[in-house]
Image 1 (tube, rainbow, N blue to C red):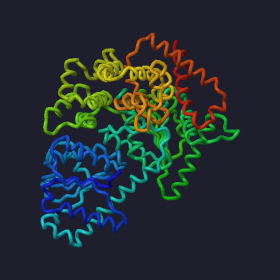
Image 2: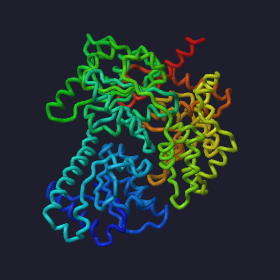
Image 3: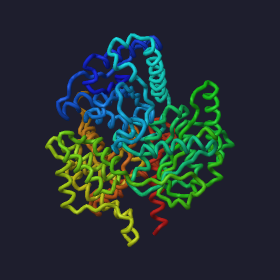
Image 4: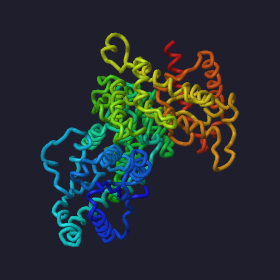
Length: 584
């Protein structure tokens, strides 16, 4: 990030230079305290519309570590100050300072600001939740007071607070991620759920295991991954992601952690249980070494999409050392794991759903009808997180033709899109079927944007493991009918056709990266990709041929560091095929 601090203020509050000189004194105090200069985003130009805000201010917000707000009546009345703060509050977890990323500096009296609710806007309530730095005694006296010793004490407190938070963002870079999918920068809302998850994991000193439960597309995995990002600074021992569909036991999950750590085992450590014990011992030993150095010593294990309750057996979980936190995501009924801490996720609230849409295409403050239309879209889709992502990504892709929320809302109402309804589920129409129907209807617009070779890539992706999709396989499969996908980039400055197609699919949230070889695909996307049954039969035959080719390889092939990534998709494909055979 290029900036330490983003300075948010009403321009009228700096008419005499008070805000500017306050920041000069703050930078001077920070230099004395740390020996280095603060990098500020401090915009002094007036804004001229939404496009201007996006081109200048949004860039600064994205590139800053902390947010400083000069609170006054003028600040609270400014539509653009509101947008700056609201955007930042939704992105605090990006900076690893959830609940601590804002430093309000209270400069002019706002009657009742912290005494009683004055208004109902969500952004205003969030502002009240941060620890405020009291500076009202200085502002009425103008610039001259900035030389007084009394202000130095306030500045020193502010500098100490800012530096401790900046240090946390630097610590987060030392936490290694093991197969952790890329963080979704469009994640919004769920603030209370994140804080509840954090509190639960810290409260459980032994076997800190929390299950996130809810139906598909509601955001269970995204919440777990966002937690892993927001609190990376506390997991110096590492953050481990294990896809668990078809995994038979918790020991199997720990075996994946052993692979990530590149552990070698003794001749006596041949059973899955013995190797699981070795992994737990290793995590405990490494954690003790970090704790002795006064550093964060926890590890985070995300068990995503657990489909077998046996994986969460109490006896197996008892192997975990106390410095390992575990987050489980599952659709299983809560009764299947009553021994765990449980957090049930609901659909997004109206405010959070609107914020999610704004992450893609911000509402224009000059056109209130756009925000009204966006909120109506959230209502129509029942706050279903993944459905709203589909809408946002589509609108972003169509900004070149001026597509607006009001136009999209009109189409939704014309198409008769219905929100998820649990009463319909009771009547025999399962929520799972409703989810697929809703997302499928929305996806028709998205699929219409794709080129033929991009559709071919998706058709193959729909048949591969959603949590470990092998990109080289996808490229080979789709490249048979579209050879341009197999061609290298013509130059360093010009991407290949494969790179262009992949970027397009990522931008539309149809694929999300794990690393250079593996991607993920949401199961609701897989369920809605259009493809003829005959075509899929042919594709399945080619996939089975690739599986047989892998199984026929010499054992030494799998000991090469650059090839072991294929093991996970191979394991999942074999497990899926076995389950299908058993169910016949």
